[in-house]
Image 1 (cartoon, rainbow, N blue to C red):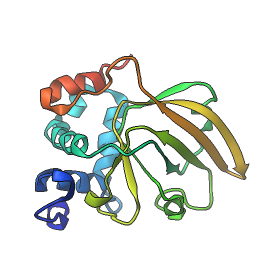
Image 2: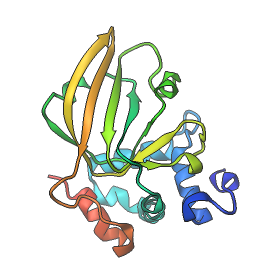
Image 3: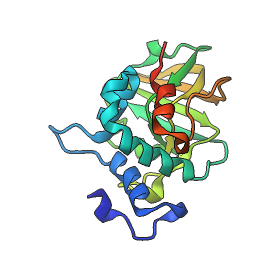
Image 4: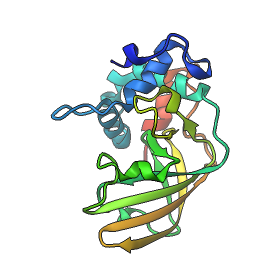
Length: 200
């Protein structure tokens, strides 16, 4: 599906395979199947290198595609999660997202039940980013103003609020870490993944 949807001359100087790799990541598979992005990110969060090995070739292609995309100027993106994560994001703490993370510059997109919805316990993140990549031209959902943050994105929790029943709002500001958390893929995918998976 992803390859069939990809134009023969993708935007941003990407090859067809590179653009299709991004598109494949964004596709939400129908239940009971687990989407590729869910499976991949679950493994990235655990830091288990052996479990990550089946994804190495795809990861190299995806990372190669993403680092070719120009960084957006500093901007705020929004991300919705259908659970209460406030206890994990205390004001003043520093957090690192080890998985690939997508958000949107259009807050109205999150009204879709696939993202934040309008009922149940939910967490709304507003993230001040400094190097997000716009993937709209390569996404399965080309009208959602999607922005991708790479694994190893580090942020400071500025504040959190509870604006309404079951809705928790958390404001994050991206910071540049002192150490390199993710290297470009061109120097070897194994070296890159070592930084992702050598977690404390």
